[in-house]
Amino acid sequence: MENIFKIGTITSTHGIKGEVKVFPTTDDVTRFKKLKEVILKNDKESLSLHIEGVKFFKQFVILKFKEYSDINDIERFRGYDLFVERKDAIELKDDEYYKADLINLKVIFDNYDSEGILFDIIETGANDVYVVKTDDGKEILVPAIKLCIKEVDLDKNTMCIHLMDGMVE
Image (cartoon, rainbow, N blue to C red; front, side, top):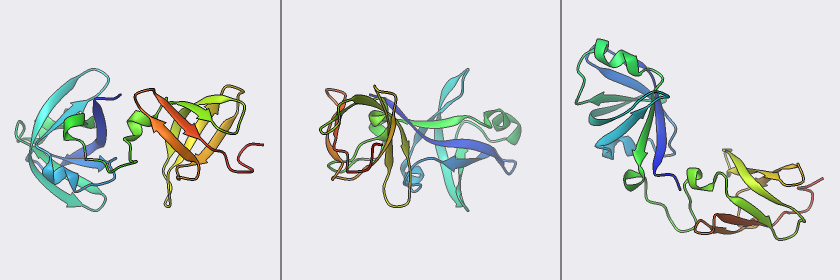
């Protein structure tokens, strides 16, 4: 299981006092108001920063970090991803899962003679759609609804799926 979750990406600086504009990748942008600390990460480095201020502008979140107060110091973080530790993640309800925990689960079908891996999750307006790559080379799109998703067992790293008629050619 993942121990950190991506919640956004820094797209640019904002103003001259060290604020950054963040494109959120979380379902609940108001979560930024409750955060005290985030992890900034790119391919080469990772560092922990403390949040001093949060504002919202259009589809972006404007963050101010305690450690930086000048545009010249913060400019280098453009393109960095923001993460939170699992302990700071949003609490889930019953039958809800972090997407990061579902990716790469072994998929067992209760009515199809193959197994697979949950490869990707597509977000739609109504419900998510799971992309499953099967052992027999097919890619199956499965709506994340109770009719199809019979069981998720994170301890065993498995998901049991029931395919509705017409889902597999």
